Image (cartoon, rainbow, N blue to C red; front, side):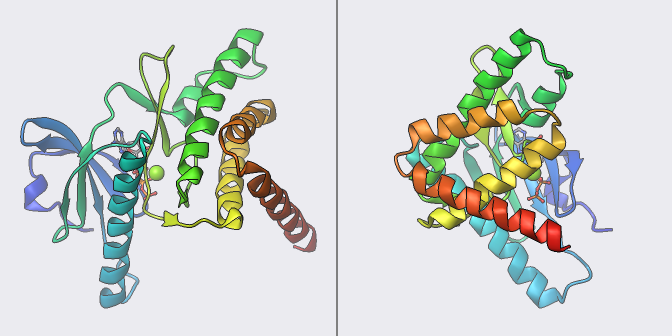
Amino acid sequence: MATKPSELSDADMIQQGAEAKIYQGQFYDKQCIIKERFKKTYRHPVLEERLTHRRIAQEVKALLRCRKAGIAVPAVYFMDTCNNCIYMEKVEHSLTVREFIQQFQPPYTEEDNQILRSVAGKVGSILAKLHSNDIVHGDLTTSNILLKSPYDIWEVYLIDFGLSQVSHLAEDKGVDLYVLEKAFLSTHPRTEHIFEQVLAAYSKNYPNSVEVLKKLEEVRQRGRKRVMVG
Ligand SMILES: Nc1ncnc2c1ncn2[C@@H]1O[C@H](COP(=O)(O)OP(=O)(O)OP(=O)(O)O)[C@@H](O)[C@H]1O
Ligand SMILES: [Mg+2]
């Protein structure tokens, strides 16, 4: 088990994933989130070092690109390449879309549906803006989208850009939506009507969406064939 870098001695770990540990700490006088990518011991150390660096750089670059394009993402404060850490703004008073949806239990009431559809619309709009700027997230799940309170305003933030890339290809954007669709519907059963709203808002806000949605359908069909063939 990797030990905590001494620079993080005052930070509290709040989450541990398969590839990263998330701490809450301070950057000068600001509350911040510190994301530490730790090394996998089963990979060759040189390859591992390179992969870890690449993912941190990819994440920071994408966050900066998003900020420049006016897409809500945490501000990057500092990148510590020695300890593979990114220091970023903590999105205060936020919860993940996953946690948000899980507060509601199916069968949803009409009021629940209204709230959920409204959030889904905001998610679709931010994805439209992301793809209009040729940024492909690479790991869209309901845990990588935050909602900042007050919840009747629901400001949507995107996080976790370690697998992101810059691409103008409709295929890459279609796969991005497909990954979210899969994650969304498997994490939140009986939400097809909610996810439809993500796609509706995406189409409305992204002029090139027709091509992307065509690719999404192709990727879905490929997925179905794979399941049938086994
Ligand atoms: N800037 C932030 N502000 C508030 N909460 C955050 C922030 N960054 C991360 N979090 C919280 O920490 C969780 C994990 O963060 P993140 O998704 O970046 O890491 P991860 O999924 O472990 O990483 P990876 O999938 O790249 O291995 C998020 O789901 C969210 O709850
Ligand atoms: Mg994540």
